[in-house]
Image (cartoon, rainbow, N blue to C red; front, side):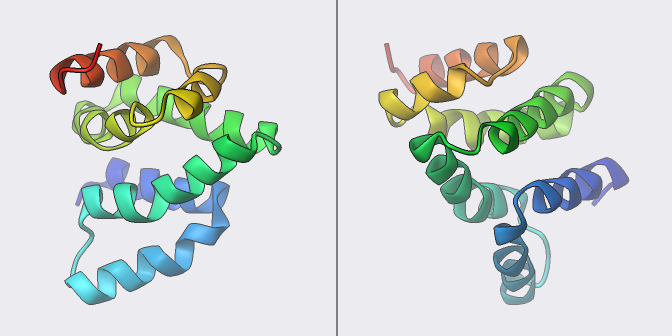
Length: 121
């Protein structure tokens, strides 16, 4: 794993401390960091919970600002986030509506592309 990817996961765990235990457990169980598994199974449930409640606005904004920064500077992580986070956000229109208040231009574009790739209107 490259340094940028490790820094991404480390910072996400700092923003969402509740994910640290699951992250470490996933690595122990799988013998390595499975990026899509950690994003889908550990980060996204916490992000969806935050969005659904829509109370910790600063934390949510920090998450989406960091994601926006990441997708604008790292192609590997942009591709991973497109097929994980962006697809999952599109699974629930109510959650997506809330998320769009926090998402940056590139993130919104990636989410729309993910919906299109999945055949969603």
